[in-house]
Length: 224
Ligand code: SAH
Image 1 (spheres, rainbow, N blue to C red):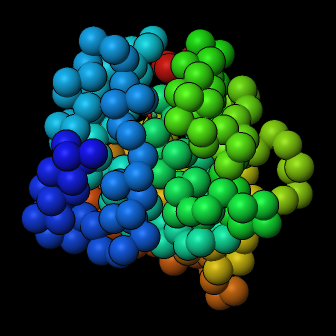
Image 2 (cartoon, rainbow, N blue to C red; image 1 turned 90 degrees about the horizontal axis):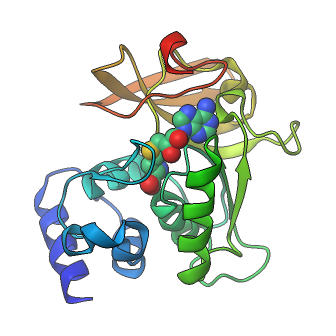
Image 3 (cartoon, rainbow, N blue to C red; image 1 turned 180 degrees about the vertical axis):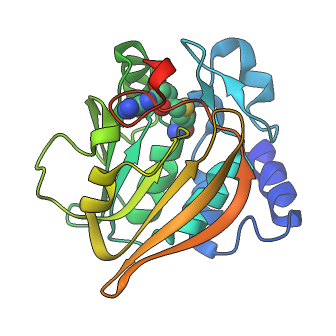
């Protein structure tokens, strides 16, 4: 807990990263050390990405915060995350949409394409008691949620870089909802927040970033 407070204090010093009480609370609650590999436990509260399995990474804490804030996730929201990885970002989202874990609050659906990572995330989410607030599915999330395809999500987070915004994700976004996604060439992207308004899509650039590659139908051609 001490380490988590120290990480939060550091994040609060970085201007514009954490702007709301709910994101602050989520960072205090979710134990990041339970989402990293055992050999990186001592670095769990450092502000940088860490390797997980299969060449993937758990994003740096500041990036996880920026994504939650940019998507404007609120209590009660339904969130789709593409790219479960360790499950940490999904747990942060669960803490925001359903801080008490009561039924009828918000829920998170997270999609992971690599079965081994999905197993890793499932174990992490079960151990930390987030598994009832997070539904995990193994599928190509570049095509959106494979369950209840007509469902519209209030918030969509993509935690892998995409060459362009996958059209199914726009389709599955609720009106007035927001989608946050790193878009651009393989080695440098712009994190963008896309809001779906009645008059059309409104894009807001958030920050430059580097994410691991999105695979699947709307991923990079050479990453499948
Ligand atoms: N959000 C994660 C970090 C994700 S790393 C965390 O908090 O730890 C990106 C993840 O996206 C990797 O696990 C990778 O396997 C997954 N991924 C890549 N392409 C995908 C796709 N098309 N559908 C679902 N997951 C994908």
